[in-house]
Image (cartoon, rainbow, N blue to C red; front, side, top):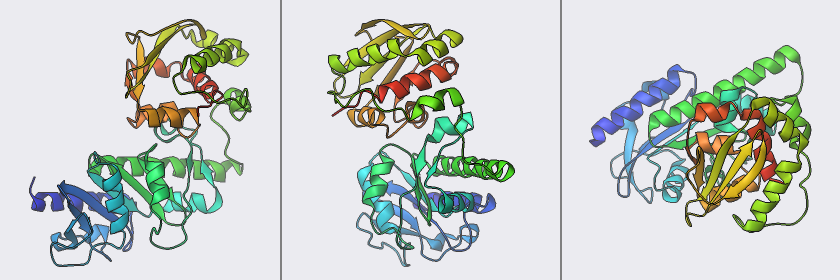
Length: 334
């Protein structure tokens, strides 16, 4: 794709952001990776709804201009994202109304709509002290476990394989927050969790203060003990008839553990990856899961974890699986 056609794609997505009220006035910036050490980035003080090709500038990996114009003041933010995530080819940073409003009054957003919960899990804003992002390190850390981050009193940033991917995740979060704002206005109440049964124990203390080596036999044994001793998971598993086999795999080492479930109870563990469901992730992502930094459903939806199997079928086990994943976090890793 030529630079001209890539500039037109930035203009098209920027217009879509404008039309969907996801960017206003002269706020926000959009970029694309277009080659080795080459990037297109919208210029400073440009409007999403009225972009022209001259408003989309070619820069190098150090932010130096390769054509006339002044690139966005957030160029360091964009370039740091590309530097840390080589597979990323698109970044959108914009100032969204409902997300900004929500995080003026709340520290954390927990979606209650199923699809939103799968996509986003729990989101906490990164505090900002200036109109521009001065410290990109917290943004990079959050992007390791999510495709989108919220910048307090500022906006959002999304990364992806395409600009349309970024647009969809921003629109999805804005709509999810909008629904919550409407619900809160109608009920004049605090955010309540999706399932009272699960919420009753969601903040339960961990079973002990011991930490485990990730994917060690000791960690797996403790997971089995907790799962089979948990009455709530037993009840939820029986109601959902959660009879299946689920394998977990470490990408770097190919280490695998397969859990055989019978109505929510684990009756056998082996090391065969030929399971009905196989979840594969890097060590970094598995560590984030066991440290409660990311929900496995969210990681799977955002492709941080790769699920082999019928997502529609495993979603039928949503309640017991949510409890299962919660129990995982009670077996903390080093």
